[in-house]
Length: 362
Image (cartoon, rainbow, N blue to C red; front, top):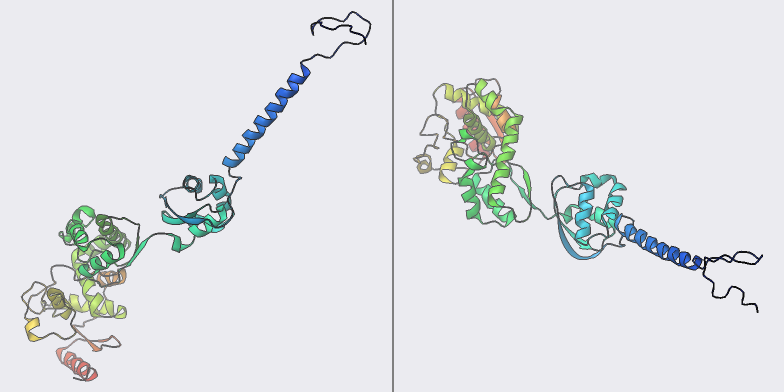
């Protein structure tokens, strides 16, 4: 075998007439290309795990609490879930949310989810109201402040004393100046949802904020001024008719109160005496009716000092726009049906009173 060229440097020229010899760098280039391909494949694999194409399967396990803040985008929510281990990647959640038209309904709040959920499963669970950790408080129209605060304590787990302390400083939490520092009547009746670990101040503030919204809706301050009344007087009238009559009779009952006030007549309302006593009795004794209190409208002329409960928007509107009429009296002639009848004369009032007694078996 010929040994021609053995030991020559790779860049030495050949001396014979035959073809040039292939450079020995070729295997090195091939090896480098192979390494580059492996590195590129790894990079693309890592990118695939972080750009949203990777996803868990199934509904996940365990329990994970996550918080969605107000203003969070779907991308931000996906990032939060990925960091908590709920979903594999931000993209897995975003892609699933994009495929679900209802995903725009995911509200701020605290959610109880699971580890290792698919993006679709996470979206579905966040749209389930049961996943949101909220305390629901329902405050009906006509509740007094003490009842409202007791219900808030039960719903949120806060101590009643803490809520009372917050109510006592309601002026710093949004209570209007015209309330005179007394939040009775201003903890607006509505349905509230509170996040876990909410403070007592925040609970009271939420109810005062809701009152402010309702007040703006009915233009309470400007409408009261146009009627020659203060907002507190309107709210006080609204609180009385809220508990005295049914909604269908609000406007006529408001007119009765204004007519009696215009004539200098005492209002003579059991509801205000009950408020003074902290009771809700249907029949009051002579001793109860003689109670010494500015809320006793049998003894004191004019409106009581303030609201006796939290009236709803319908009652406030009726107090601002009473019906036209000369009525001076009303009698709930059928308590079970809440049937109220109105009279313009004292003799007619006595007739209605006898009707009530007959219906009540008296």
